[in-house]
Amino acid sequence: MKVTIENKKGLGKDIKVIVDKKTMDSYLEERYEEIRKNYTLKGFRPGKAPREILKRQFGEAIMGEVLDKVLKDTSAKALEENKIRPATQPKIDLKKYGEGKELEYVMTVTELPEIDTKQIQNIKFDEYKVKIDKKYTDERINQIAKSQNNFQDANTNHKSTKDNLVVFDYTAKSEGKDFKGNEGKNTQLILGKDLFIKGFDDQLIGVKKNDTKKVEVVLPENFPEKEFANKKAIFECKILNVKINHEVKVNDEFAKNLGAKDLDGLKDLISKQINDEYKNSLDIISKNQILDQLNKVKIDDIPKELIDQEIKVMSQGLPEEEVKSKNKELETQAKKRIKTGLILNEFGQKNNINVTEQELNMEIQKQFQMMPGQEKMVKEYYEKNPSAIASLRGSIYEEKIISEIKKQAKANKKDISKEEAEKILKAENEKASKDVVNKKIQEKNKQDKDTKSATKTKKTTTSKKTVPKKTKKVSKK
Image 1 (cartoon, helix red, strand yellow):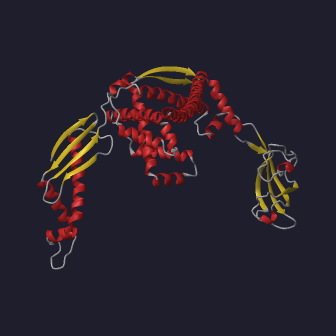
Image 2 (cartoon, rainbow, N blue to C red; image 1 turned 45 degrees about the vertical axis):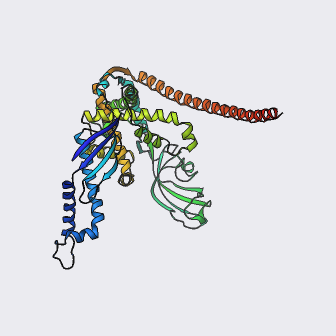
Image 3 (tube, rainbow, N blue to C red; image 1 turned 135 degrees about the vertical axis):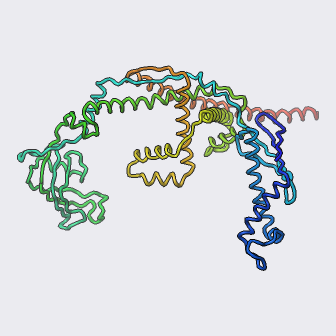
């Protein structure tokens, strides 16, 4: 194989490849031999069919298959040997090929630009560590305790009140008829929440253990048996028990029920949980600082093909006229995104960063935990959408790269309190909101300007149409 690099234009290169006749013949013979082994021809022993007969029947198809294989093998080898990394799929222009001939083609390639990732070491970013005061940990634990139910049996003479738990059996009829669900055993209601049938709870206020109480309600409009919808029903309730919700004591037993070793262990867990809540948000600020500074890394040239592809992705779903009017803005955004992507990818390759199947599966498992009961749906979604897996892999890859950049860049470490963290996050949110508002104002001003410009052009065109007519009449005179 002979490779010549010619017509260098910036990142563009034309690579001329010549594969000699002997090599082409060996590829062809190999393919003919594969077909011969599996082809039975009348009058010939299995695997002994002459090449000429096979050529008459399969020659065109065999040449197509061999050509595809040779192009794939030789183009990849030509790029690898010359250390050329294509930004997009190379274009191949066949010049000469055929049985008994050498293969000649020209491969047009747009190469990825050279990027000096050492510049990344000069990036500066804020790295926050939030110190959580003991009082915030105690507040959170008390909130958890208040949200826990601790119902205990009331004494026999206690009359139920709002927020008590009433346990009862019931039978019900509507206009003397039974209906589906008209019997219940050990039904439990927390009075005042109105979660059973509207108005049911209120009628159980004041009952004691072993009482019998008739409750009259109107069955709901969406009742399963339509003939009973909006009809009155009488529930005869046998009160089995009344329970009072006692305050949960914050102690070692309480901590164990929440999965901690003891109360001190729970405090450590809650403190870390609060810290992580702030850390995740603050880490996004740090990441944005890094991404903003990546734009300052010098790249001599960005492949136009990549910019065009990115604009196409960004403008999906937009009306054609809007794409035209926002062309410059889209191009600027596309260049920024492509530049950031190229730098991150180059840094990732030079630092041997990759995403393992284990890391991918762990991330999917996290999504299972976030969507309990919908694990099958999430699993099927990824199985049916390879692009979703690719996107998830890309997100993990980017996070790993950012993490490595943080190790190599210059961190401005800041120990801050919870209050300071809230101020920083608030300021960042206000800045983001302001940017959105300013962008809308800019778009509105541009629209107004375009409208005025169009109106002015229309007036000018009208006046120009009038002037020639007058001039023409004068010249005639």
